[in-house]
Length: 221
Image 1 (cartoon, helix red, strand yellow):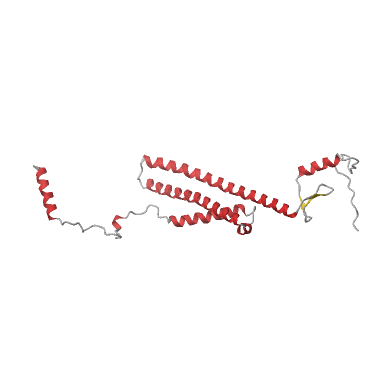
Image 2 (image 1 turned 135 degrees about the vertical axis):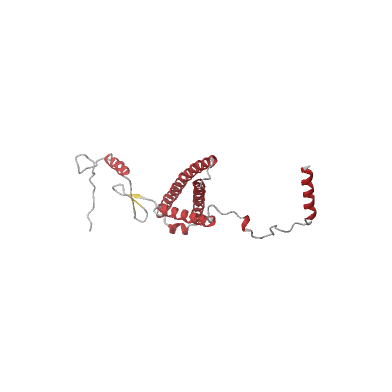
């Protein structure tokens, strides 16, 4: 009996309603504050992305400025492109790191308000692990970038030495380039050179241990 009465009531409502429902229905592009949820984070992610790009650019510059001049990067197309790619790569990692930190903070605030659920603690633990890995990867990426620029610096030195011409060796094993510049050598190379000099015939020394050879130095006019 009750179901029959409810059915009659529904039929009356349908009969009284209009063919088109146009009341209390949001129109296209209509702004309804009631339907909007309040943001939990309140972060401008576009601004955050730009900030990460600035941080990445500054980190790379500070890391390589003692290895290779910034002026050289500006003047070399290959180095300019490489620098842009390195900044883009590092900025992406920083953006992921900052985003995870922001979401983790929002999660902690929700738990602090009493909205605790076992799943939320699981998510928090997972995000903590992710943030730790991102920190480690960021440091490794910065060091890897520095090593690549160090290698480029060594390659540039070799090119400059080749451009100056072949090297010549003086009486003490001193190397000079085509323009007369002195090429420094390590301690190991100097010791090996002394051994070679000792092996020469009729070599005279000024010390009893025969470590310092006597050189014939012509007086200056």
